[in-house]
Length: 215
Image 1 (cartoon, helix red, strand yellow):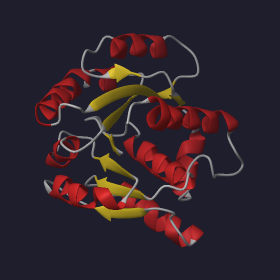
Image 2: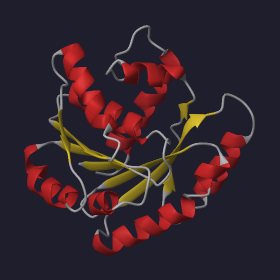
Image 3: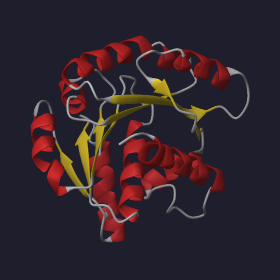
Image 4: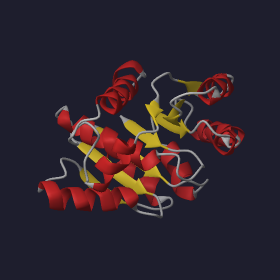
């Protein structure tokens, strides 16, 4: 399965999503390739730190850019059970190339206007990708959800109205544990002291991506 953590809003949580899914998938015994297609190279830096701290990252990570994302992923897909691609927070050639070979696109949205305003442009990106890859499945979810207030519900209403991207219910809260775990080169399910709520949220999202979402 080829999963893209995408979108066009920087800081929405794509790298946190991609790295957590890669680690959790590898813990299931799968051979996982994490592709860092983001100019900021955060996923590659996370993997380097993880390798230093834990001796083994548990998955393979490579850097790819531009059309090479499509070409190399096509060449490598038979060697791995899953390929997870982390794209940058812009409409880039790398992201468009990734979507031409992906099975699934997962787009995190924060419960804020600046995030929601990008929805139309992400829908256009998905529509363009489906002209080449008609079987592409696209899903959105709320990341860094507020602990209270109406922003979450309002964001869900907007995302649920999309005719290009299906909204899925697992939500990641605005929890410091995600950032702290990342800084240690760990997924949220590995970091101690455990934030049980954060772990349950990520596990629910993982289950939706790899067990509920069609492969």
